[in-house]
Amino acid sequence: MHLLDSDLVASDRMKRVIAEDTPSLMGYDETAFAKRLHYDKLDPVQACETFRLNRLLTATILRQLPDETFERAGMHSERGRETLAEHVAHYVEHLDHHMKFLREKRKLLGRAL
Image (tube, rainbow, N blue to C red):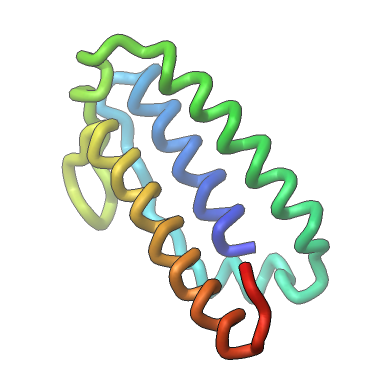
């Protein structure tokens, strides 16, 4: 659920940087999201499919952009000025970080991923 919400927030931020001039990019409290959105009661299969579709749509948008668009920037409330290129790299790294954690966890449980 965290990866889905994080990706939805990231996609929104990327779209704002693409479409708006120096937009504000607000941080969010991931712990509050988990608690108040009742992650424990949501369907993980549905979340994975939504994540997959959001990634496909976002990738389609990014692939159509001219190179100079990746130099556009927004102002993140916690990190300051952030270009589209930096934002894309941050979310690739974010997913890689969590996937490494999930693979290690499943390995300890005796399950492959």
